[in-house]
Image (cartoon, rainbow, N blue to C red; front, side, top):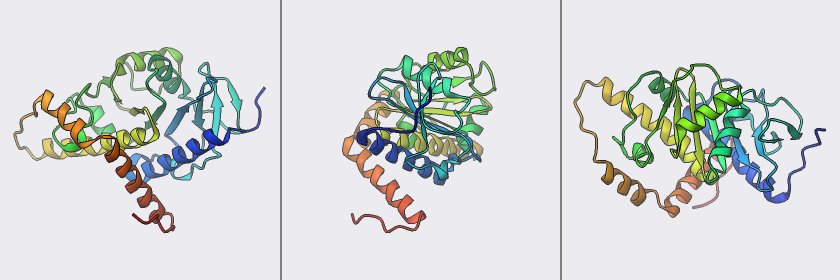
Length: 247
């Protein structure tokens, strides 16, 4: 039986930050009407907290979540369960290191995923993905509404941080809420950069793989992720008419 929304104070704090991630991603080009959703692995082992349906990314608050088992049963919260819950559930099942999953139809990343070129570390943001790359799932262009498709996407994702869903959108992950946000933003930014670079007609080399991995470790340490998290939250505060915290 579905119960009222009743997270612990600790979970509520995480959901507040995750709601801010939704709204920041709308600003950063991930919005597509009421489509797109982020989730948080329930720390009590009950499943995941998934954004409820029928809301734009820009409309999500800390109360707009459902507690859903990894089998799809809604335990807490009011509202519509997104059809693509298996995408989140199967990534959580396959990847114990992942605590957050995002799915959106970010414009440039979706454009890039409609082609077959490999996303490369040709700028700083692309270096975020240098270690495992960004695989492309092309078994279907449909939305991921079945456990079978969710398993297939999770298998293709492997140990990568993000995946292109051909002719559909993207999925991205994080160990914490900051990593989820930056992964989603950098996936969109690096896709746009590479589209612009390829469209220019210029020839360009792909940076060395080992160097790109070292570069990512150098420019994205813990304190840098925290700094960028605060930057994007200041951006959101200004967009929503609030005075951001002083630096």
